[in-house]
Image (cartoon, rainbow, N blue to C red):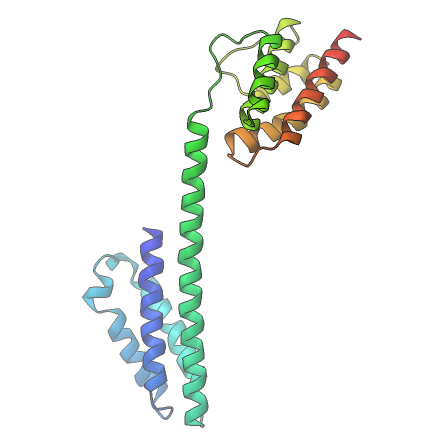
Length: 228
C-alpha cells in the first residue's frame, strides 16, 4: 500500500511539472492552486484515498508553492528550470523504485538462504561436528563449515555442563547463561563468533575461509579456557 501511494504521488508530481513547463509565467498563482486542487480531487486519482483529503490538500499546497517559485519573469529561464525539476523528480522516482526492488530481492534471498538453516534436535558431540566442518571447508562450503564449528562450540559447552542445550533456545540465550553462571571469559570468546554466525548463516552474507578459521580458533580457545 505504501509503495502504491508513492507511485501515485510521484506520477501526479511529474504530470504537474510537465504542465509547469508549458505554463505561462504570468499565470495567477491562485488560479494554479485551484486547478491543482481540481486535478487532485479527480476520482481516478483519489478513489482509494477518500479518507485522506488532508493529505491530498497538503500535496496541493506544497506543489502550488513550488509552481509559484518556478514562475519567473524570463519565460525561457522558467521553462528550463521547470524542465530540470521534472527530470530530477523522474530520476528520484526511478531511484526509489530501484532501491525498493533491490531491498525486496535481498530480503527474499536471505529468507531463502536461512530457510535451510536448522539446529538439530539432538546435538551431535563436538568432535564429530568438527570433522564435518573440516570436510565442508575442504569442499569450499565455508558457511556450512562455520555452522558446524559454531555448533561444536555449543556442543562442547553442553558436554562440560557450562550450558544446557535446548533446541528452542537461541544462541544469545546461551551467552546470557554463561554470564549468569560467572563464565565471563568463555562468554567474551563466544560473543563475537555468535554475532558473526548471525550475519553469515542467518543473515545470508558471503562466508569465506577466514570466517570458518575464526570459528575454529574460538572453539580451541574455549576448550583451553574450560580446561584451565
